[in-house]
Image (cartoon, rainbow, N blue to C red):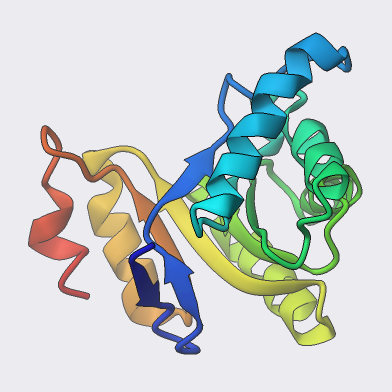
Amino acid sequence: MLKRPIPTTGEMLPVVGYGTWQTFDVGPSPSQRLPLHNVLRTLFNGGGTVIDSSPMYGRAEGVVGDLVVELDARDRAFIATKVWTRGRDAGIAQMTQSLRFLKASPLDLVQIHNLVDWQTHLTTLRDWKTRGQVRYIGITHYSVSAHADLEAVIRSEPIDFVQVNYAMDERAAEQRLLPL
């Protein structure tokens, strides 16, 4: 599996990961979870590690947590999630729930989703990183219209990860964000 270094630490991370939006929002039945168990097993067997989730993905965080434990793969999984609420207390509650659902302590990566209340959450995440509750912190936004705001954050704050829409049909990130 092709890997790239995380710029802030040099830790190598596979370039391919798995996003859990919609597909991992399933119930507890074995018939619903078996295909997802197989997906994660295939990911790990192929050298992948990154699993991206979010509290906004329904039951996905809990399903990921259960399956990673079932596969005895916590040492192979790089688990990323997001915080996307307003206010310090609401953010802490959301991230604490993510820790519980994902059965991961520390979380490998927590990103501030779509820059929602980013100044508040960045303060909390820095504290969590210092205390060892999260290894990396990041920001996200899906819209090209937010690139100027993302650029300002990247230039002014020590961020480990930036997640943007970048695809064959959406290459605007090449102009301002990727060079940073």
